[in-house]
Amino acid sequence: PSAVRSMSLDNGFFRSGFQMYRDPELRDLHFDLPYFWESQYLSPNEGGSGNTTPLYIDFCMLMLGWSALRDAASQSVALCPTEANLENAGRLQPQLLAPFEGSATELEEQVPRTLDGVMDWAVKNMQQPREELEKHVFQFQRHFAGGKRREVEALTSGGGTRSINYAIESVLERAKRAGVPRVKCITGTPHLAVERSERRFLFDVVRVFKGGVICLKSLEREIQDPCVMAVYLQTLSITDGITDPLSAALHIIEDENQRRKRAADADSGKTYAPVTLINDSCLAFSVLLHNDGERYGPECLRVLDLTQDCITPTIMTQDAHKHLGADKGISMVMGTPGTLSLLTGRVKVGAQPTRGELVRAMADMLFVGHEGYHQKYNKLAAAVAEATEKIEAAGMHIIHGENRARGSTAFGVEDPSALVGRMVKKKGHAPSPVFCINRDAPSRCQTGFLMSLTPHALREIRPGVTALDIFVADLIDCHKEAAAKPALLAQAFREDSLAAILLRGGQEESWVFAQLQKPGMSREMFSIMLRRLYSAIFDSGRVCTEKQPAPLKSLLGRLAALATLLVAGRYGVQKYSKTKR
Image 1 (cartoon, rainbow, N blue to C red):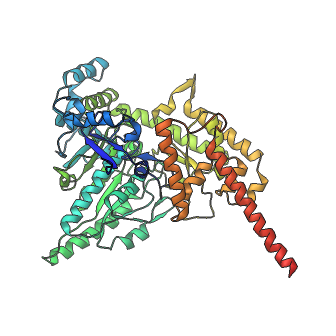
Image 2 (cartoon, rainbow, N blue to C red):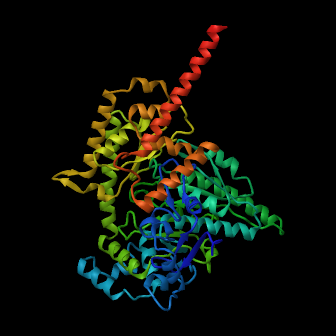
Image 3 (cartoon, rainbow, N blue to C red):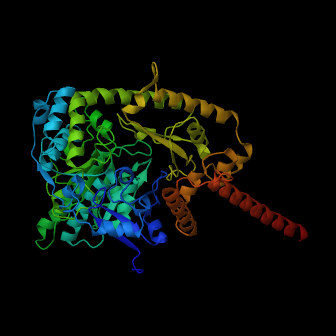
């Protein structure tokens, strides 16, 4: 029908569904843009994992035509059963995991840590009930996530963004039952996933930060608002590798929950509505490994252990597909009793991992082993620490380096006008641009780039030389080259201005995405441009022609030249008017 602008099909070809559009403007709006996050990122629907292992596939990836879509829509699960659509037809069922003692799970004790032993287990267990496979994965992850000494609830998901959504949906359900009208969540500088959830679930995010981490003084003030139902903290931020002050923040949250509980106990008609601690540890595997409170020192950054004797509801997330070596699209969320169970019976939005994916994930973990991960990440953490020391010794500044925890595998580097980042890219590396990185210090450099590393970065490219070694050497060379040829005219402008970036030859995308952070016409204009650009990329590949290999850069250059002429003309007119007077 002509009035239908979009349509969703449940239990589709790939995961739990896909979406199709007749109206390109509506499709553009389904591309998420970062209005507050400091990194360049744009993707449809449910996040990065949704692009490679689709959670809810956008029709922009599937140009099938209406007749093919009609045929797809008319098919039932019974007529074309697949592992994915059969397993994801049900509703959410969080698992309750009992405490366990010892240094190994039951499965680790049974399966030999050899290739043949692991393969034999995997083949024999491909048809094991999904709940049992999930339990094995959860129990192994508790070696690093924490919470081994207590009962916890857990759910698998198809990606980190979806795990974060589970946590937030749990908080919203608790708030609904308590009669809280408009939920607030306090945070520092969170992942884009929080921004996405804010738009979709219609709650308010209160951002309080200093030096890249949550500001404790502001948290103490803001948390007294009865509408505050969650505090979102990061164990590792991908943009700069920082860790929020978890223990200090927990102390503030626990005090507030104790106060709310006393008030509810004193007034029988008042509902106890605690603040939930949501901890984003999706990328923080190495930090969790190195900060267990025992093996590497007294500091513990595992929130399920930190809240062991607290009344604060706690939820944490962790991806298996980034650092544990599992297939793309395997993540989990784990919480204290009474948190994730609030989602029991909810309709699934996006698929959970299939049995085959869970078996492969568990096989990976069994083969590497608990101690194997310690060996790999001790080596990686030492290499990253050495790399950041060399970068700083060469005269560059590590963004918010004072707030990076032991074991951090991500870091950001200040890069005035995004010049060095572009030069490093030309050498074959892939740092991601960051911008507006020092909002609380406007006089500091606002542009830079980030690196988030896994053990793959330590692969030898040539004997005795790793990929990370080559990156650091190339980065230092590029920094020296840029410093030797300064653009004198660019010094007349702010380093993150379009004029300075173009004059220095930096990455203009940093300036474009920074405009999204300013409400008004600037945001609206660049939102349309970026959404249409990415739509064209999905539909047609790279947007360029033989005559215009870089049309966006060319357009921005012409606009900058026009703006310069207009400013110069206006200045000339004003000067002439003063002379005439």
